[in-house]
Image (tube, rainbow, N blue to C red; front, side, top):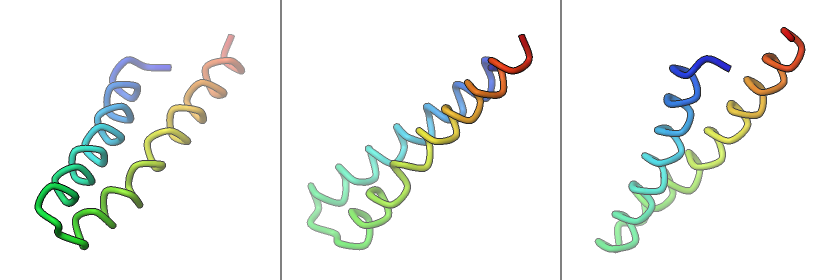
Length: 57
């Protein structure tokens, strides 16, 4: 897996956690919902990249 993609996917998941936390802190339902829906998006992307790199070897 390329380091750039790994960092990008990790940052996507981290950004979702920050958005969720900010929404909870400010009691803003839309931010909380956006953070919750975006959080799982980073993990499958990392899994796909790991599978791709396994087949390249």
